[in-house]
Image (cartoon, rainbow, N blue to C red; front, side, top):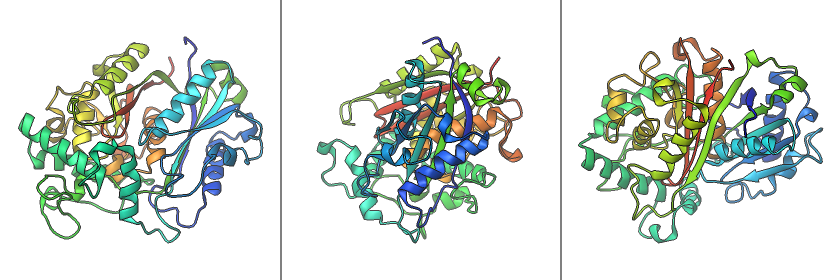
Amino acid sequence: MNQRIYIAAYSQSKFGKLMDMTVPQILANAVTGVCQQINVEPSVIDTGSIGSACNFTLNQQGLLSGLAATVPGLEGKPIESVENACASGGQAVLSVIYKLLSGVGDVGVAIGYEKMRDPEGKMNGKLIGEVLGYYSHPDERPGKVFIFPHLFAEIMQCYMQVYGVSESDLAQIAVNEYQNAKYNPWAQMSKVQITLEQAMKIEGINRYVVEGLPLKTYDCSQITDGYAALILATEEGLRKLGVPKSECVEIAGYAQATDPLQKEGRNTLVPAGAHRAMRKAYEMAGAVPADVNVAEIHDCFTVAAAIGTEVLGKASPGKGARYWVEGKANVDGDCAINMSGGLIAKGHPVGATGVAMLGSCFRQLKGKASKEIQRKDPKVAATFNIGGALCASVCTVLRNPA
C-alpha cells in the first residue's frame, strides 16, 4: 500500500440539465472528455469504476460497466459499477485506487454520473423523493413524504437544539455557497444569488420542507444531471501517459467507513464512521487538520456542511456553522471550503458528486479555479463524501507532489 497514486486529469460536464443526452452518451463523453485533457486515447486506461445511485430507478439501466466498455479501447478491460448512495462517486475513486494498488494496471478511470431530469430538463420531484428514499432504513420511512429531507430536517433540529445554533447561522452556509458558485462555470446555480434575508424568509420557492421542522428550500442541495471523471495513475502510469508529476495531484490519504443505516440509535451529530475515515485519511497522508486550507465537503443540506466542517477537524462539535459565519470557510479564510459552490449551488448529481469533489480540489491545488474562488496558497486539500443520513463516508487528503 506504499505505492503512490496520482490524479493525472479531471473533466466534468456542466451540472444542471443534460437534456436528451442518453446514459451511453454520458459515459462515453465522460471517458473521452477526461482523456482529451491530457491528449491520450482511452486504450491507455487499464481499469475503471463507475459510480451511480439512480441508474436503475430513474434511468432503467444496469451494467454500466458494459456501456463504458463500448468506448473504443475499453473493451475487455476490468471495469465495474459501484453504488454507495451519495458516496458512490467517492467509492468509485477508491475502487480504482485499490485496483491500481493490487496490480490490475497502472492507469484507471473513475467516473460518476447521475441523470435525474427528463429530456426536457424537467424533474419529477415525487419520484426522485421516492427513489432517494430507498437509501434509508425501511423502518424510518413511514410517515415521511420526502424521506431524506425529513431525516436531515430532524438532524438539523437536533443540531440546533443541542448546540444552540440558529437557522440564520446555517442559512449563511447556503448564502456563501451561492456566492462561490457564481464564479464556477460548471455550477448549476451560477446565475443565481441569494441574500441571508432571502434564505431566511418564507416566501416563493423558499418554504419549510417538513412542517414543524427548520429545514428550508435554500438549505437543500439541487436535483441535478451531470457527470465527472478522473484519470488516476501510479508513477509508472504517469510515465505511460506522458504526464509529469508537476502537473498532477497526489491522493496522499484515503479511507472509507460505514455506520449502521438506521439513524435512530446513533449519534449523527458526531458520526463515528465519518470521523474514523477522516482520521485514517489524515494518518495515511501524514497530515493534520491544520495543514488543510482547501476542502470540498458533502453539503446535501446546510447542517451536513456544518457537521462536515467538524469532521474535517476545522471546528469542534457544534461550532461548524459558526466557522462559516465568521468567514473562516471563505477563499481567504482559514480553509477555503466548497469554493465550487458545493452540492447546494454547484449541484448534486448523486453519483458524480464524490468524483467532482476531488476534481475541484485538483483544480485548486493546480491553480486552475476561477480567480475569484482560487485559494492563493493551496497547500493540502481534503474531501468528505457521504451516503445516506451520515452513514457511508469516503474521505481523501490531496496535495501537490513533492
